[in-house]
Image 1: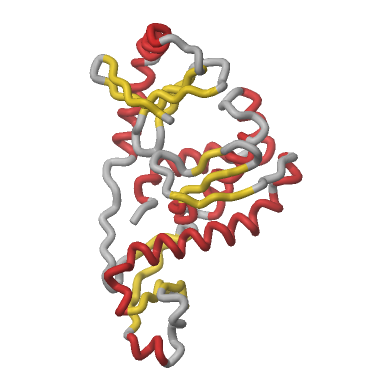
Image 2 (image 1 turned 135 degrees about the vertical axis):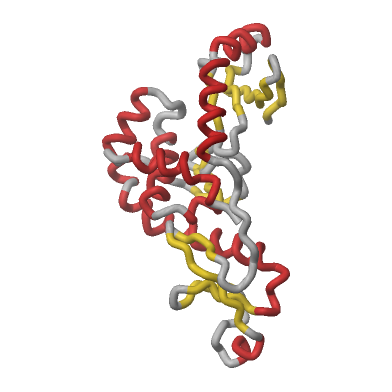
Length: 239
């Protein structure tokens, strides 16, 4: 549970947990998250934020430049939609095509011969069909990609949950649970892998400590390239 706060015109969200120290993160949408121990006093929290104010504004300015605006995609013929870093154009299929078996009724949206094909009769629910399709693809990709890393990292993922995480690409829950943003699978497979590895290592090291980044580097030496791409292009991974 997070509470909203404000200090000198800076809005932030306060998250208390069992952590031992205070920390600040800037999420993908520019939200400022202040993470503190349960017992932290408000005056100490404000002092910490004040000391980090310049750093926060620098990060927010960079985020604003890199992610100027969300994409404006329309669900019309020819519009491109991302999957694993590539753009595929949308093509509407008439209902007769569905009846003839061209597009199965159980799957109103599919990626077929380089196009996203959607039943014409499902046009009004196009966004929901895309979200549902992306959710299914994430599960499939995770099933394929986890075996590449779990033994090297030394962790076991107990469960994967796909949801509409408002501020993050993924998050590490308790007891081996990882939450994935359905938008993550729009990125290239190597960026997707970086998100996956990042959260798998959080199962060992909860905070972004030096040890955390050493573990990431050991598994994915070029992770900075993927993290940089995500920071620059993350706003485009949306509908």
